[in-house]
Amino acid sequence: MRALIQKVAWAEVDSIVGAKTSSEEVHPSGRIEEGILVYVGIASDDTVEEAKWLANKVSNLRIFPDEQGKLNKSIQDVRGDVLIVSNFTLLADATSGRRPSFSAAATFEQAKPIYQIFVDVLREQGLNVQTGVFGAMMEVRSQASGPVNIIIDSPRQD
Image (cartoon, rainbow, N blue to C red; front, side, top):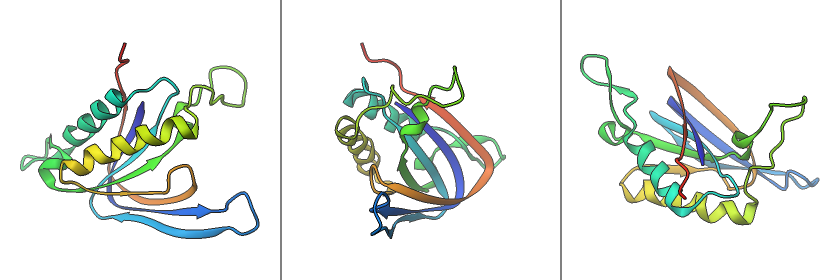
């Protein structure tokens, strides 16, 4: 699993239902105030254990300033909000050619339950977690804070 975590002043996502048809509808899905925007990509060989590990890593990542301005506080410490957006393009391989390959990304059926566990673990920790619609086209708007952007890959669970 791969997560791109961005510290934000606010973020929101609208999910576009029916994006591949002429009956496209935009549905507001989630909005947060100060917190983190988390894009999550799930590989075809990712596991439930990796989802739990990554959720715990994200919730305890110290990227918020303490009283001295050092990045010593986590989203848990500041009781910030979390907006999670599924994003298979995080698994892109652009090492050859001009068109990225997404072959490492899990299928919809493989990824959805693992994504849901990631979301559930963060919610179980008492965080206000909002999400887009899994697998939908989405429009994401945010105001970066810092800027602070961190990429985390889960360790391989063999």
